[in-house]
Amino acid sequence: MAELKESTFEKNAPELFSKLETTMKALKDIEYWAVVVDNGIAEAKRLLQAGKTAEAEQKYTETRILVEQAEASIRAEPLAWRLLWIELAYLLILLFLGYLTHKWPDYWLWAGFVTLNSATAWYGALGGVAIGFYGIYTHIQARDFDPKYELWYICKPIMGAIFGWFVFLIYFVGFIAVQGNAKVENRLVLYAIAFLAGFSERFTIKIINRLMELLTTSEGEQKRATNPSASPLVK
Image (tube, rainbow, N blue to C red; front, side, top):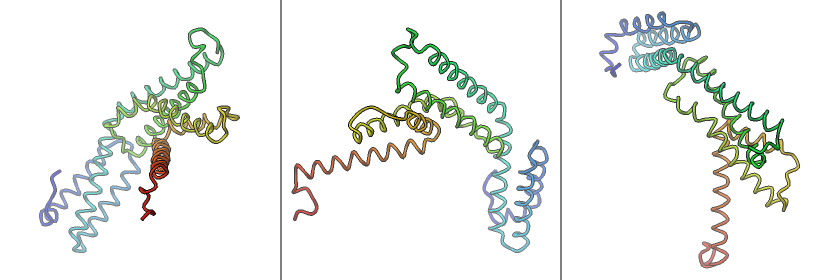
């Protein structure tokens, strides 16, 4: 819908409100959203009657956006179901691979591959599948599922495997730096970290940002050590 001028909105408000109400009635299984939209329309009408046309138009626009999101989400439900089956396929593949490598760890096909690195990648991929399931469920329930994120849902388990392995690598190097050896007493901690890295991109980005801060700080300290005149404290 095109943006409306204030006078035009006030003139066409009854028709616009009626269209929203008709659209909501045509949508299926959205009792919660119907209440939200009804409240939004009622609030917009109250503001309009109070002479607050700009506020009424803003409330109408917010309510219209909710209706459009609900419409788009309902239209995208077949896609959401396909993505759900894809995530389920990822999960079954991961569980199958995990069972095979646990049952026959010395099988020649993957004997040298089943290491701590591959285990953390596996847990990262599992975290990616978990957030995929969670995202599809919550967004369909909220009626704001966006089909533009289709590629994200498909790639997330793969990204999760990479993130899980990379964040594990950061922590593993940290263990070596702190403990002086590469022996990790409790691998479950690393598996949990890898799962979180695959599940949450924010978690991974925070870890990467902290690593970059440490590296840049260390580089700056080395430059000041080799060239004291570069320090701001040296006059």
